[in-house]
Image 1 (cartoon, rainbow, N blue to C red):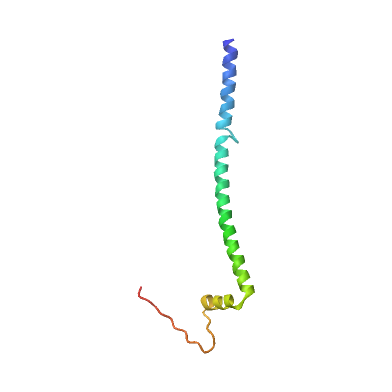
Image 2 (image 1 turned 60 degrees about the horizontal axis):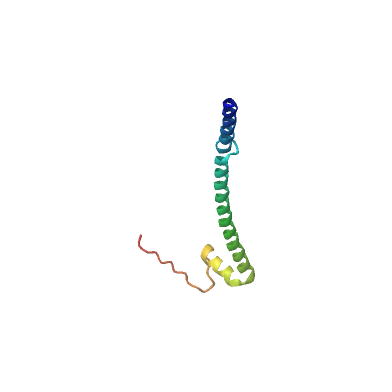
Length: 91
């Protein structure tokens, strides 16, 4: 009877080892769970960026003020008859 109990105990230990340390065990599960969390955070940041881009596209389609602002800030354009002043501060 002791031999049978010993064999059952060894089988139980083997099953526990594969559960905790084996392939697709709990350690792999924890790593994959962390990876999924990181990817969900990255996706949330990308969704926010996309929403900002969609809002900017809507502004550009809707009116001329957004186009004028973009032309002034990014391209440095000015209207005819305007004088452009650049103020350079101390570094």
